[in-house]
Amino acid sequence: MTRPALSFADVSLVFPDGTAALDRITFQVEPAEVVSLVGPSGCGKSTLLRVAAGLTRPTGGAVLQGSSNGLAMVPQDPTLLPWRSVRRNIELLLELRGENRTQRAARVEEVLELVGLRSFAGHRPRELSGGMRMRVSVARALALQPDVVLLDEPFAAVDEMTRERLCEELLRLFAHRHTAGVFVTHSIAEAVFVSDRVLVLSARPGRIVQDIPVPLAHPRADDVRSSARFAEIAAQVRDALRQAVP
Amino acid sequence: MRGLRIVLPPLVVLAGVLVVWWIVSLRVLAPEQRFLLPPPQDVVRVGLLDSANRAEALAGLWSTSAVALTGLAFAAAVGIAFAVLMSQATWLERSLYPYAVALQTIPILAMVPLIGFWFGFDFRSRVLVCVLIAVFPILTNTLFGIHSVEIGLRELFALQGAGRWSRLVRLEMPAALPALMAGLRISAGLSVIGAIVGDFFFRQGQPGIGRLIDVYRGRLQSEQLITAVLLSSLLGLVVFWSFGLLTRRVVGSWHESGRRQPTGKGER
Image 1: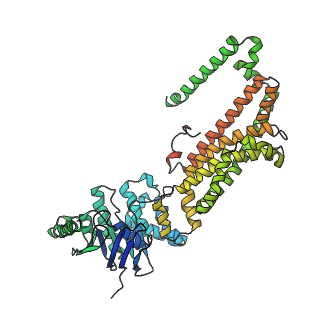
Image 2: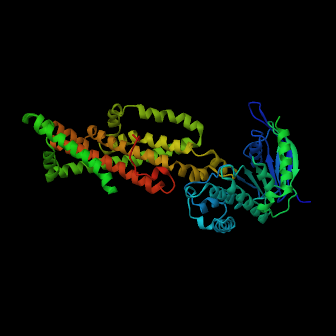
């Protein structure tokens, strides 16, 4: 039995003004497993990610990481440094972690290749499209070789087609390194496509109301989206969401 | 063609100004009043073509430039240092910022006699006036730049456990650079003004253009007076343009402020 990559044990959060944001959230993310969080807006999905990342301290319970390899975050906006090239942006977190130059260079080249950004390595973020920038943001997280990647509606700002393509790419990348993921999204289709499990949260305070497994085989290609099984699971998630909103 | 369209309008304005100047000087003013505004050709002849006069004016201009640039360098060092210091702790900012504002509101002329008492009446004091007059825009712009760093980027650094120094060097300073450059540009203009003001009061050492202006005024040498005024505005312009260029060199590859041809709109 391997240890979970990330476990949430009775995580609760009450803001200083008394609003309850999260209510005893308990779940585990197994190694290489992708879990999606869906729920009505304001249900605390993003807050839960912030708690997991350690940016917000929970008022109850705890989040435990399976190993010291740690986690990486892909925020909603690409948050790239505009004065750095793509290559140097991907290098940033390694630099902050104090890795030496040769290690960094090797890792960055590997990730550039993996994400297909090699020919854009010297470009500045402003020269890239929104989808490309998001890809750099994902690459930057993967360069850390984390056990878990936390993604906070990462593709909310890109168009539908790019979004689907990025999701497929993401799955491929995760599978490549057996990376686990926690994926916050508004899109039911996106949640079903990328995850092994979809957790449906209730309106504030966020509670897990349903844990829906997604038994679709990997690797998943575009045609999965039009399969009957996919539609069935999506409908299940939609029903759960309906019930979650009072 | 494009070049012509950029150069032509200001040239037309210049020609217009010269014509009006010429008319006022030769047609409006009686010959005995003409010292009030000598015609342009006299200004050029006496002020610029006369080699002794020209040498005097250029030496003055040089001395003023040296004061202004030295003052600006100190102002930049002090301004940036204090901005960085204040950005690192709220209590520091709270305790120091009111005095930075006060520095800006104290009329510099009121300080001048004191500065003379304390530091003498030469180069040092002139530089000090420049620093006092030029430090605030650099300080406040740099501080503003550091405070404007996106929260998402700060969190990215926090998540990796980046230290204060790392955050300053890799995030805050580069992010503040465009604002810093804008501040530097404003301060550069102010520093030139400070150097000329200083000239009027601190009369020891090599005379600057401000002191020459005062001398010419006393002797009613209007041709040279006007030349000196024109030269000092030219200095201001050159400084302003050079910092525009510098901004483009430093941040042009990634920030809008360094992209466009500087027009100076709304910066003063």
